[in-house]
Length: 362
Ligand code: AOF
Ligand code: ZN
Image 1 (tube, rainbow, N blue to C red):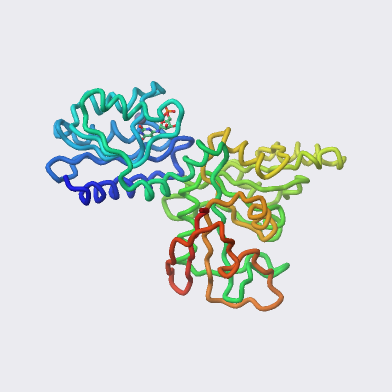
Image 2 (image 1 turned 60 degrees about the horizontal axis):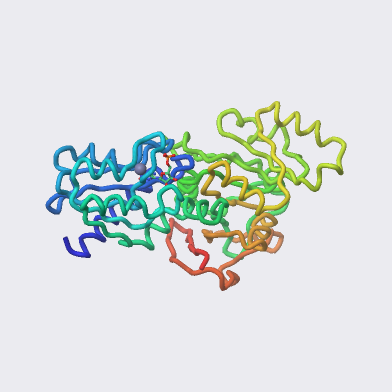
């Protein structure tokens, strides 16, 4: 198989891995294709909730044809005995001839051991194929493993004149339905979504994924709410039984306010989980401890600015709508002209009249 073929099949495996991104709890969504005589004979993606892993499913799909075949996997096959046996053992047992991997697994239980087991069994092993693309697809998992914090995608929608909303006007439509569908897809592919209390009160957002059929893939919803002011009548609280809501209070505020414990008890009674954190960084570490990898930060301006200020933004999706809001608008903390040198521009996409500009931390 040529290097171009290897890249082509790995690209299929990466595309496949997206299918369950944000739906596999703390596990990364991994893609695997099994190729025999230049034809894909088996496919697998990490199952919802994380198990089974991708490889045994792709091998089962290939059946007898897996013997002597090449397996393309976006992440190094695991070598540990978790709730399922190691994937490297499964690949060895069916007798694949070659395993091509995009990335080694930073999980300390695996971390090179999976590849070594395969090589020791006489399987031809290659790693680093389409590494950059796979790194992007697995970025939330890799960030949680290596930085011990959740991965942050800052999503902003800015009007043609650089505004993100209109003060006192609730939600203002900046982008059209095609862009909105993309935003809901990002929600399905993420583990959690966060807004500030200002936005939660002014916009009364639901923050769920409302693409038909994907409603159950909604991310956990988080409000940075230092004084626990989230209204019990808000859509977030009223839907807390269906999709989790977490209100994050500031540890520093606890002692300052007599009504705090009462509001906390009322929110808890309504099904909202409340936690205390000393800083954004501490909260992102807490999320990682819970196994949450991919977080979207959706607003408003204060929260976006705070994440940027703390240098805790990994990816930026900047939507630019065609509408104009005017000088009474709330200015965006970020416009295309003002994205710091710490970010690389990845590309531009068009959704109807709107455009999206993607950036990632260098
Ligand atoms: C694979 N294939 O499809 C995935 C892998 O809790 P466990 O036992 O399921 O293990 C979780 C770890 O397995 C996770 O941290 C990562 O190292 C690996 N994920 N490995 O061979 C897969 N999802
Ligand atoms: Zn595995």
